[in-house]
Image (cartoon, rainbow, N blue to C red; front, side):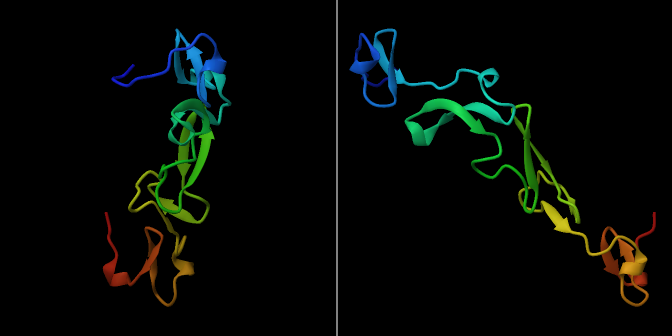
Length: 129
C-alpha cells in the first residue's frame, strides 16, 4: 500500500495501535473523514503526531497561520485573521502583520506633529494626495 508493506487483518484487534482494519489491511484509524464531521472551529486534517490519523483539529492551531500580532478566529472550518483593537496592517502577511497604532488623529502627536497612517510625522514630511 503506497509502496509500503502493511499488515493484513480480519478485525481491528489484528492491527497495531492507532490503526484499524479496512479492506483486509491495517490502515491509520480515522476519527473523521470530512469537515462535516467536525465542529465549526475545526477541520478534518491528517495529524502527523498521531501516526497519520485524520482527526478534527482547531484550524487556528499549528504552523504560522496569521501575520505578526494578528488574532486568529476559527469559523466555518477556516481560519480568519484580523488585527486586534489598536493595531492596523495586513493580518495575513507573516512579515509585516499588524502594527501598533501610534496615533488616531493630530492631537495624539506631540508639538505640531501630524498623524498620518497611524504614525506621528513632522508636517514637512506629510504626503498629500
